[in-house]
Length: 233
Image (cartoon, rainbow, N blue to C red; front, side):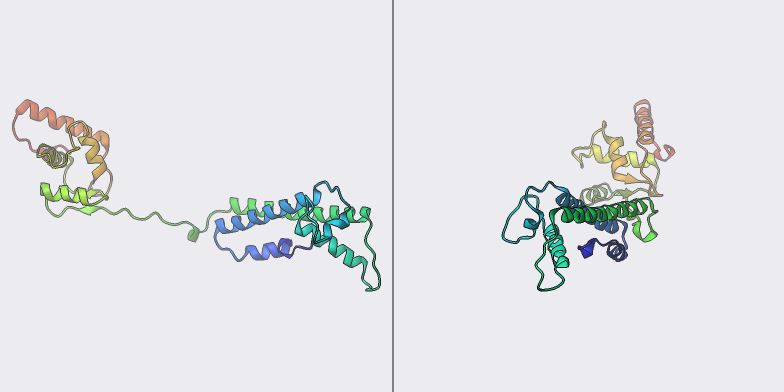
């Protein structure tokens, strides 16, 4: 095999330079692509005598640098003595090319085996990047305007350490004061679920918020008095 980079020992040695799974696979797929390109060139139909494919100043369709180098090397081997000017006959060159293609195909099989091993190999601990810890904004004081400002200034959710009922009451007051224009009765539960987390940094369940909000509204409508929302847990 004339291409040193595609020598199986060279490929396996170079593979050890990579530590990441994706890098190893990227290298192997690159080598496999190169091999298929060369195999296609060597196996393509040749309309001219093979010795013509070794000439520099002739552009021939289906030729490639690897085939040109290979034929030149065969001519050099046939002329070990400087006074000889022999060229291997057409039949011998075709036989040698066929043997060379077989060697390249063996390397493809080797690469396919390595790809399969790497793809099925469990990822190393260093290859698995831990998910970044989510950041939440802690509420320092239960002031409507302050909380609205926090919501507008930050993409992160606010950490709510009190009950769901108290949160609903607070957001209801924000809505009544029209501090957030897009907030209304129909989207309040979804708004709470999207903008707040509980004391354990867990998202508020939309179903739970909707259920408590329904109780909240029912109580207001039935009593028309101020309610103690801390009971709506």
